[in-house]
Length: 162
Image (cartoon, rainbow, N blue to C red; front, side):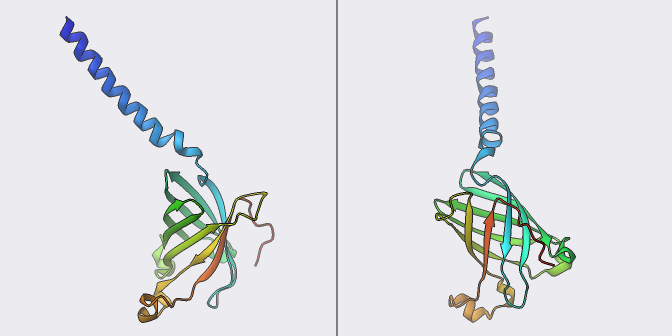
């Protein structure tokens, strides 16, 4: 009888440990700073006009992952990417890659963002991104790359660009 209670107590303890770990990893960290909806503005770059994307970011500790979808210009609204990154203090580093490669298999690269601490009314991150497919590999590995500028913000841009 005593061994049965002991084994039952150990079993309940193990089950509760797994439940608490699951809740901690999957529910309680949902409200981290970067989790939620963001909007990305990609400024005109390398012959492309300005573009806007919607991001749905999930943060787990310092790790970020997300889904990106184009919202403007409307002819590109079927374009979708995945994002994986890391946040540390005021910096985010990550990679993005297109999901629907039949649209443009060359849309992948790196992202580096820094929080703009001068903006007080919302969180704004400014930075740069690369698209290595269009770069001379020698220049890329020498660190002489051209980069597009971007920003992430919580509020959706108001005016359609075209």
